[in-house]
Image (cartoon, rainbow, N blue to C red; front, side, top):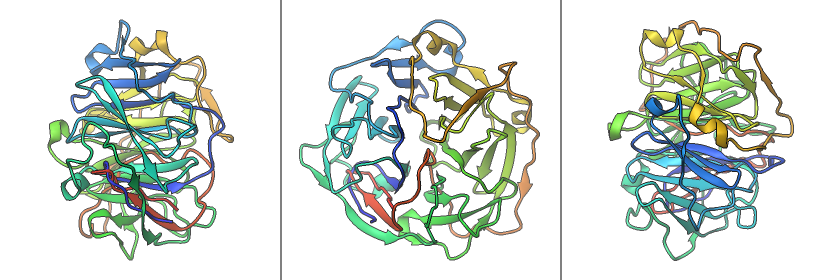
Length: 371
């Protein structure tokens, strides 16, 4: 069923739960990288210029979720500089946990009627403008927020494992049955409407994988591109929804179908199922074709001894530990982009869609989609 809450702006599909708890990573609005749930502690690794050495700062505070849920995921509300955690508490899976990077404090938003299992979600960048901002910004409100049915998915969701991404205030669904490689089905968030035809974006495979939105610098606006990493880790595809093009970068050194990803305006970060944190720089220029993946070294000493893994996910690491250079294949699409395109998030880690309805939760700025 599809429902509507009030906190940020999330769209999600229900999927099968993962077999173990998972830490997560996220950036704040100043592009400090946070690692949550690392051996029951949380860390601030700082900006990318500090990742090569040293040790991340311990920011563990009271009120944090236990990070023992299935498919725990983190999201940045850039306008508010707040980080939201979904499914971070197995005892209360519908709660939304809010971390304020400025105050280094946690609050918890109670919700009702939402999902109680693993799911994939995306956080819309601009829907805050249309929501009740004072309800949830950097802290939860005292009253429970209920979910509201929104709309049936615009395509057949039978056995569909969600691959969802946000850019330009649109949710992009990849690897949809019957949709060609290099194309996406699109849900227009602000009009609550599925575009009737898929949008072509160039050259990327039709297979399950993970996604993450690439932010614009310092609140310059909504995300206009997202990264897509197929489960085989063969490449990192950056889809630009304004130019309708796809650029290929190096695939992660660690080939891990259970890895999760989070991007800032200048880096794409991977958290593997074994707890390693890696990144590749992104500049939106020709130099991206020669970029390679590196370790976030100041998180190595605090990396979790175990992490969540999908029932079907396996991790393999290259012998050299460094990614091969990606070849730039920025392929322009002949199809025009109708309206604006947008969506952000991670793809579902595993499992299948349970139903075919979209749900939205507006937590003072949240919209969630569930199938």
